[in-house]
Image 1 (cartoon, rainbow, N blue to C red):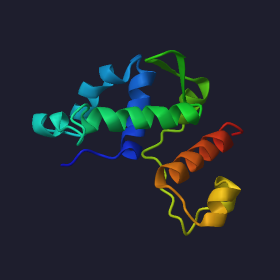
Image 2 (spheres, rainbow, N blue to C red):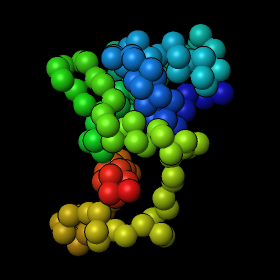
Image 3 (cartoon, rainbow, N blue to C red):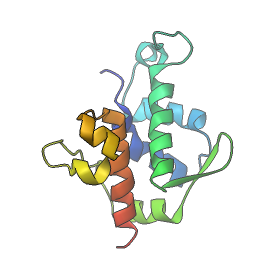
Length: 140
């Protein structure tokens, strides 16, 4: 198996923070077990050679969940689940909803400069959708 992308890591990572983990590095062994990764896969480095793919993607997942309001960071490197994150987990989600650009409201989610240029960076698209999704969830 290859290292899952950051979207796939969001739900298991959020659950680990709900169970009391406070740092992404503490969650890595749990992610390795959850995704049944080999030691070689878990140790695979980014081209820079400075960080593993697993650590990188877990930190991206944490970052987007923070922007969505599901996690808070009371101080650098320390994270905790928010009430919104707990409410989300209470709905018993099985996976994050993936949205294709065909069904995505690009105008509502992108800046006018990006919309006029027709350029949409995948992380920006996903991040803004994710923020919008979590925000709409808070009114439920």
